[in-house]
Image (cartoon, rainbow, N blue to C red; front, side):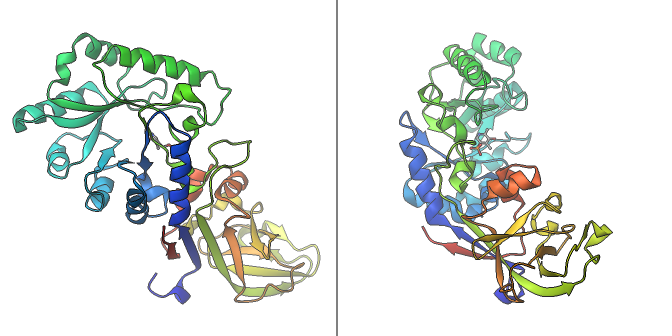
Length: 364
Ligand SMILES: *Cc1c(COP(=O)(O)O)cnc(C)c1O
């Protein structure tokens, strides 16, 4: 946004809090290093700002989903591992070698292609090997794993940095899948050449020592999402989103607010309108359910969330006036809180954060 006054809202991003969260995760993962997962533009906070801040704090391993995301941050992270979770698509191998980007090898075809690239270039090339232990998305499936365990020569030319797997339900410590995946991962590694391991995501770090490894891969917790749902959040909040009230309207009993008249005033009411809507990641499913915080107290969201506008009942808050700032996200109403109201998770709230906000970064 070129001029703050033309932005519908101000998004303050606290890089110091992101770094503090990374340090806390390091203390909770004594078995090994802690990477920064900065896919989806650093979970919406801005990978080009988040990754260098983590790097300055000592983080030396970064994960993104796509090659383009890796290319965007590579130059600012000298000597660090920048790994692409999505795997190298056929033909993209030269982009990896030319830019020192490390692929996650998710199947035998990718492994063979990367080994062939290594042979052609006459040097060994770094790679991570992803083993599927329950997610059934990416990673070697049991059949492919058995083939590789029986024939380690397929890894020739590959500098195997980590063998990794990804937890299915780590935010639920009582889910038996957590133990089952730890067993499957141990068995997978036992049949492969000795290599460092990468296991836990954010919540996995809090499961216990059995999920420790040489490299944890947290994303969500870095950005303040609670890795231990149902228990107090050990992480610091990293974002504050405040929206300016554009207008305040007095309406009469029976008057409706917004598309399809889903809310009607039961009493003389004051309706405050902000310039943030579902196009800004303020989810339409918050219609009739969300709140905004004014002076520490919640104003109920009334009517439908529109593309660019949202309406709140300010009847009991006469101090709300045009120009007042309402807090949509922050310490009082966290991304996890908004996610609960919207029927999603904090990950989706953060990664949906719009491009129209005026962004202010608090340095680390
Ligand atoms: C996204 C992702 C992570 C990070 O998960 P969080 O729950 O955000 O900590 C780690 N590993 C893989 C493979 C991922 O896709």
